[in-house]
Length: 292
Image: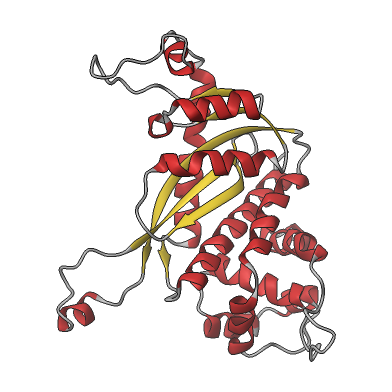
């Protein structure tokens, strides 16, 4: 098989194309040993390969073709990559995640919104047992994402370090997604059942909204003209079940890039989670590119 047909090579080609808009150096006083694009792609590969900083650099020593693609004639020290990850802005990673949809011909978004949890690595069981924390519930962070269901690409993500109801992130996700592309339809599960969500999508975004209403019985009386009551009369099951693709994406991300966040500081935990989303989007773009 030719090297150019390798999905790994295509993955790196797309990553390089995606980060091409980033300035090569953060300052005119930079040492200019490595470009920001090179370090950025290394961080993406770190998530793809599920390696530590030290393991990543050791692994790159065996991949001459990749080093040539990146234009690296000398590998950076692991601390150089780590320091770059600390100073990079989360907003830049979020922008690159949203830019992935521009690699397709999609003009309007069929949006699905859902959330999932990721564990934080807090030491081995035996270590926590010695500290008396063995019975303590493991911490986790919550990832909410809006997804283009046709192309199965992540558009916008929201990360929280505390447990909150899914509903709080619905409007921010839908609003940010609309700033990237026009939205045609938004689907979500019953956790997002709120009249203000329906109103926002229909009046502000001028899009179709399918969120099945929860059954409160006779305890709460709703306006008979509300969007919730209109959905009780029926909605397209075919359109609604496109939402299940968001659950598929969450499963694939955890399977390919790991369900554990290893960073200890919140800012680094957020960046690690964003790089997982970005690595997934590039993985998906590879699939779309090689598909007949």
